[in-house]
Image (cartoon, chains in turn orange, purple, cyan, yellow):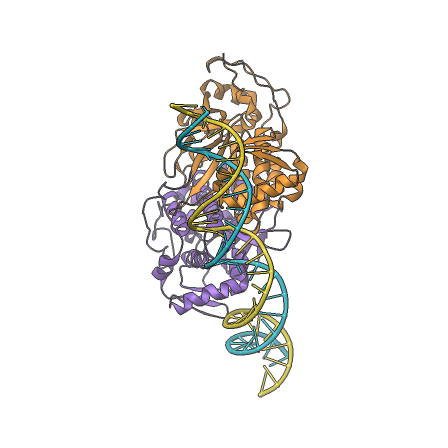
Length: 267
Length: 267
DNA sequence: CATTATCTGTTCGGTATCACACATTATCCT
DNA sequence: AGGATAATGTGTGATACCGAACAGATAATG
């Protein structure tokens, strides 16, 4: 037996009404996501929709000259593979696992079968997509106007929000590539945060000591996006936290989450 | 000379199969769009979906300190009001008419009635939304990595693509606010372009003299987005002619189809 | 333990952009 | 026509970030 999180630990899956969830559930396969895994490349067809439970995936754009920038970060509040239901089939970015963990995935045809019933799943995912859009747009604004230090704060907060932990595993080099800045810039900014007692870092391990301190330094972009997620996906506050022991993916005891069986779509 | 364009001059409406178009058509009201008009503010409910025929609308994000940045530009290839069918109802940005002209608009309930038939309109608009997402993401990347000069080229090309004309009406100050940079920066960059014989500008009037010259200077972002639009929204079913009374209008400049960005580089 | 690889700290010069101030010119208005 | 307004041009210094090179420190490995 391996300790694998429940699908319901993904907030989108958790927000589905039980009838829809139970139709989907048999087709959800757990997938172990390792740091560095690539879910899709630019222009490459994706065959699954992924629902992270405790991993983090970066949406990265690479440029010809080798530069790159992250435009979104996706954890258990969301899903990877929106292009499948948006209709494009591929995207111009790449999806890179940035923090190890698990996700549940479902094959496109099975997923689309449910999506095309045009019920809660559709409404939920479109709302989620709009939240993702807000995140990407705000990233654009932030890239233009805010300092590396502020963006580092934003990035750290986004990560700990999704990990539900105050400890991160990532090197300064990695952060730099995500933000699209130099590694030295991160060294300097992170040094200041450490000196201020807000974080503690050590060779790829970052511990956030003072969350509110980070929030005091971060630019408005962080809260704009967070508020928009909360507005669009109010159920994302529902933390059905505890893992369940789960062996294999066949017969999973359908966890009823009382009080959350409503659709998020209150259009 | 002051003919009101046909709704079919909007490429989304034009791409609808005639049965759907005819259901929609009675509800389409022409709207005159003047420069500076605001279609919605952040958090403000929108009651129409707008389909531009010959105007340009900017999707702008403002910040507390007064700064702003454009994350997308929308012309007759698209629509304003995706939040209505995405389900959010409001957005975090504002929509500002940036070049005067006409649009057809339709009230939300009537629009949603058609959208909820889950037919061509839904699929078309979701694909369009994905293209819009690509534009916003690439804007984020561009803001991070490219110079003011390159971004100016991108912005000019985006505009003339949507105006189907090589003459623009916008001041350097306006462009600066769109790109989120200083006006002096635009003065300098535009001066270089003029000196190179690529454009000619004069107190709010810009004429593009050498389109391919601009394309040679622009960063890759422009073509990444353009290719993605062409891929997702081929000028399809009702290409020029049939239902369009104003077939004399030029289409977007020649479509390019080089591959999507190579996947070399950091991460 | 020694070696290697990885991660972090620091420096230095170069450059793009910024912030501000002000001059100049074209267009608009009465 | 003449004055007001809007748009553009220029200059000066400050600063944030870049590019590259290198040094020290810690973990990983054999």
